[in-house]
Image (cartoon, rainbow, N blue to C red; front, side, top):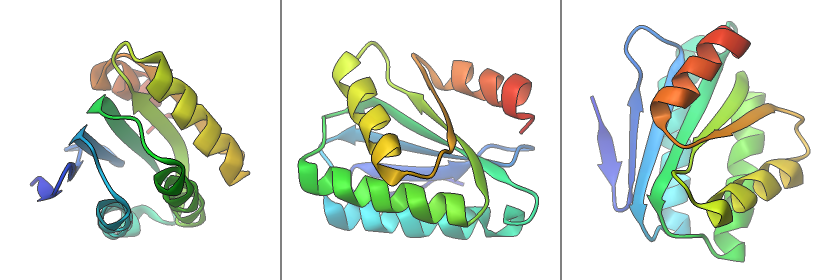
Length: 132
């Protein structure tokens, strides 16, 4: 079941320990806080076994520095809650890839991270490289 708020949506990939979020257009801090809470609630059952997160940013606008700070905090919370890897689907946007990489670096979590054009490529990487 997909849950939505504003520009954001969240769902669990059936049969996998993967939470997928997708955004369309411009988001804001309130929506990002909601997103963080929703992802954590969906992944709570896998805290001990580990899980992965995919952010489909392919239809998103770049974020502001304040929103980037919220994404850094979200990354820290996800890792603390057992997230083993982050995968980003960014289409062909170099700007989104650079922003996502910087946010993960700023989180200082050392979480495994990869960037792809599509969600399908991200799912395949998680299956082969992370075993989730």
